[in-house]
Image 1 (cartoon, rainbow, N blue to C red):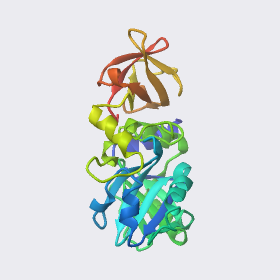
Image 2 (image 1 turned 45 degrees about the vertical axis):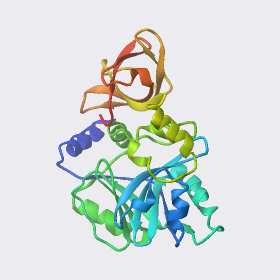
Image 3 (image 1 turned 180 degrees about the vertical axis):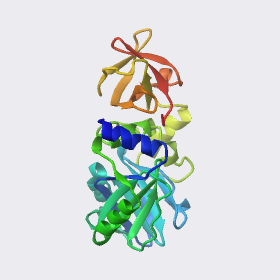
Image 4 (image 1 turned 120 degrees about the vertical axis):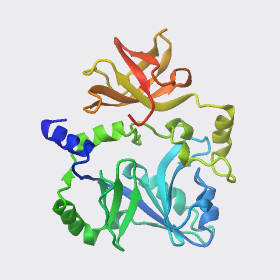
Length: 298
């Protein structure tokens, strides 16, 4: 992160300025009289409980309870809008589309019709019929129709919003404890290992992978879980994939993402840590370095 990124970071953290980041994201619309029935058999959360205008987190698991995709779902009238990473867009679409032949269930990939802006400020509001809004941990996310994207961008700049670089976004992502598919999680990750408990309902009916997910939950805990690490050395030289060990030299997990946090003035990381070492402030080793477990977000 360079000096300009650090200046923008400080403005955001002190809430003196709004900032935005543009990226590709998936947006998929589901409708039909049997939408709730089909969706509740595919995702981990209870879509039937979602009220109009509300959103929820959910996951698409496979039959082994492992993660196909994390999504946010927004209900608008009788339709459901699924928002997901670009890396999982096609998988979500195909997971849904295969059921369009089975009943009153319609799926449309809207991703190419919208531009995505993640605004790092909860104060920036836009009311427009061609703008779809999702709340996030760091502010508000907007899907803006292609035709209105330039106007939306001009409005951001009129309000002195600053564009975030890829490097700065990565720091903010890690500080906020937001996992990235293909980096911090993939199809080898059991859904509950992400630590995003609000994405799973344990009271609704059956869905793909439910038996394994429920068994882990009612057993009491996962074998490992995504969590944070704070290194004692502010310039710790660690990398994704590095092995984590306990002070007794037992295998304790693996690092997935690393950044320097200006807020903490420390190197931080996202990591999968084994259950026995998950308690906050547990001291662990990565090579010659030491770090303490930190519950997310940082």
